[in-house]
Length: 316
Ligand code: PMP
Image (cartoon, rainbow, N blue to C red; front, side, top):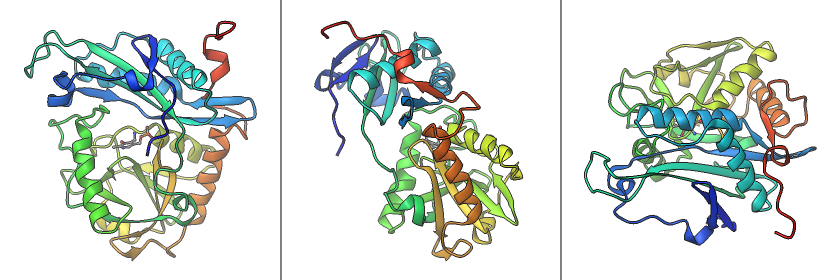
């Protein structure tokens, strides 16, 4: 169960957690018209820091743009709002969820008088695929559901509606006793998990599906690509046939929620030795050092909450 906090940011003001409500006839409820983000704020030696806040804010605006949804805030304003919601709730490490949705107005597919409402909530949250997953890895399956086909629902937009497909993948996997499902794209190549990008390693080379394989351009995916380059690990973006997963030495998921999670079996076939592999471990270690400020922030990925949030008024 979600750990409620005190305040949620709504269109530039704070409302109480329980008052952040929408009408059942809001456009989003019938037609799935929302775009959203998920970020993590980590404790660092210099205080709480949001990981890649500007990149997530930009992706939110990009998702809105694809859907002709005008999100009336800049990257800087959204970054500040994310820092403020973290600070006002006294959070040190948390998950942050900005959502833009089409609200209450006319009922009908064409959004006419439906205002775009923006909310940002934050709360404490643990490991997405379980505490043990990070070290032990997870058992996953190939989904019988494919990812979004090109020119249907745009995969590059992080839209609420896309998660109907994600739910099919995740529920089927859970039903069959797996932690997660890996979906293929329309052409039968590896795409991604229901909420994670995927990396496959064989003979020391790291492979990940390209942006045209119906993937979300994950911000963790991008971070891992840059970290791999720094560690001088060869990495190629290319189409990956399904069977490559079965003969890989190592496979791992990436995502804000999943962070870097090793995969130890796929369709009950052990990946490599059936435990977290050395390259995954090396990348994972560096990722956690970077997000928690243990190493120099070379890429300027950390936004210190106290540097960005408005100072609290005295006595507030
Ligand atoms: N793919 C999907 C479908 C996702 O929902 C997510 C989580 N946002 C990701 C990939 C990973 O993206 P990120 O690293 O930006 O969290």
